Image (cartoon, rainbow, N blue to C red; front, side, top):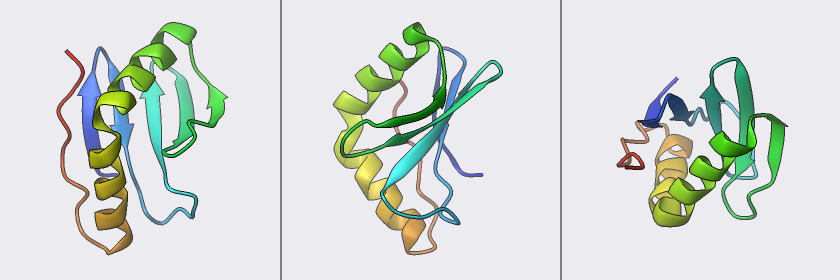
Length: 85
């Protein structure tokens, strides 16, 4: 699965064999979530600390994440997005 970012042990990826609405996946330790890009709706379980970091990253890079989704939907590599520092 194409990884688009990684920070503080959190792996973010997009795979377009999925469906709409536009979303991305995140893994941290044994936890996995799916997060909708537009509204931040979370499916799955993850620590509050990890989710706070993910949403901080998303706030900074939302347009890039949307572009990555569009590229994946077109069958292209989504690219890599700068990690949270």
